[in-house]
Image 1 (cartoon, helix red, strand yellow):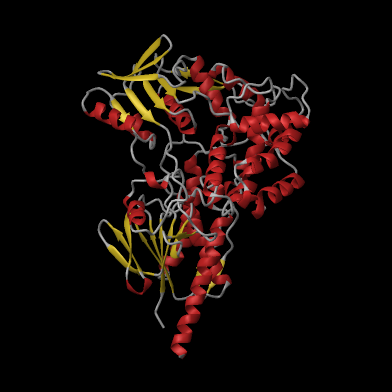
Image 2: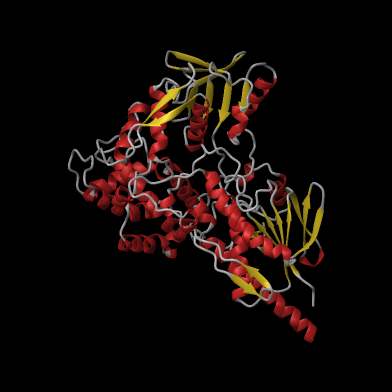
Length: 585
């Protein structure tokens, strides 16, 4: 009988760490925790927390999920044949304080990272001590199939051989630089006194820029969550925020130096992110009932419906009645024409496919950015009648777990599923919005003259000796620092990491669609170009297209991790039985 069966996990952030935890639990459950070796690779060295939840990052980087719903369940104690792993508390028990009912908390990402790292270490330390696991701070560049269906893992310095299975949980990967960014990079290389940051993180890189001072103008490409992190942290370098109203989180920005037009964000549409509800009481206004969610799942999860769908109408038809019914039951909503449910459903479906739709119940995109931010803050804090678009976005967020459950591994055509993914992405301005306080900070920065919103809507950009000249209508401004805060979409064919490029060229993986990620089966195992299931599983962002809903921290602890772990444990049990049969034969 072979000594051990080897599993390699490449990328050990939150998803990879929890995957290991689930696999250990499944192996013990199936009485198969033996003859197993885990080899873990994490290039950053941040085992358990990864890049996004790095415990050393700035406290200005906030998560955009309220602590109230961050239900990361406890891990039970493990005592198995000499292996003793202590229990680890749920996140809510770990924080050890009452969650506020007045204002939802959105902790810094480094706080979540501390929890994830401690949880991982409490598991991995006993595994390493007993010889079940080894850790490597190395970047993997290539996987190689060799004889006997074994796999080699190749890094810059070593080749690790004799793996039976691989799990890839590699998260966000670099993509091809756009033509615009390539031109900007060349521009910086040929001019003094200007700087370009192709990645906003870590924010410490921007703060240490020799060209950043009170007279700087920092242009920020993108108008989303990352932009807010950048604006908040740079703002705190030159002043501070003072809370005026504890309940609404309204604040004032007080600079410590004379600064003006320090921050200049811009995007293709110039639309601001929409804050989530202030607290549970307001958020519950938008929560579908258990019966509504059950019926919704039945409708969108029907395999025959999925298979025959020619477009996304089946999803819209299932969602619109829920959102319309909730809208009509709100304490106060913007419905000047007193429309009834059928007409509201029609508007909902049209708006989801065309967010520029003009309707008296929807906040017009012709409003100024400052006006939109104030309106949405008032809605999120219960001080303003709710617009239909705000309601749709919040209801969509509540329905997302059901969508992700029923529409991952679906029977839709590739083109229809690409439409579904793009629709979900288009709602993120609302459904993935930041906390109220984050928008209040932008409002405060704007009121103080530090945040300039005159160029936010797709300005013309010209490269000049002093940096980048932005033009909008009759206004001009020149930035000496440019920050790219836009996160690339997971288009597998655009990824530039050597590991993914080599797997594509070797036919180990294939793209679901030109705009999406990798084809996997319903246990997360990849299908090669000949539709064969390989002993390589892929969980997370690069599987978008086979699955939907991959980015959130809750998904790192979601059912897809358990589905993979169950199958991986079954594979190991089958291997044990095969070895026994061979020994007895």
